[in-house]
Amino acid sequence: MRPLLVCTLMAALIGVIHVQPAAAADDPVVGTWKLNPGKSTFKSGPAITSQTRTYSQSGDEITLDMKTVSADGKESSLHTTYHLDGKSYPVTGDTDYDNLIGKRLNSHMAQFTLKKGDKVIGHSTRTVSKDGKKLTSTSRETLSSGKSDNVLVFDRQ
Image (cartoon, rainbow, N blue to C red; front, side):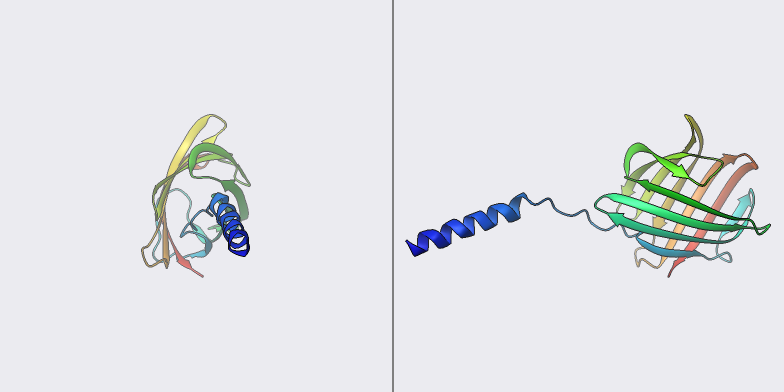
């Protein structure tokens, strides 16, 4: 009787463990990143003097909080929570775009389409280095202030 009880309990435990969904793997972008202006390239559009990006993750949902200081000293904040599933998600705090569509290209790269309403205003790609110490964001956008074509390099904090 006792071996039967132990086997039943083990089977029940294995069943509970088996049906639990696996947690999504952490995206390597998760963490805090600070702009390295000396390594960044502002080909066109307004330069920024500082930017801090903080990414967090819950399951497969990623949240970005971004604080930026422009060349004229103006501060701005952006917030979005998204999935890398090709669907549109809202963005708050930016006057040039109000939603984004993200797609994972590989384990260290994601591509985004930036939209204002239904109109595409630009595209960006973010890449985390294999050693996880650098984040590179390449973007091409048509903003209210003109065209922007930049490569931003960030250091992990």
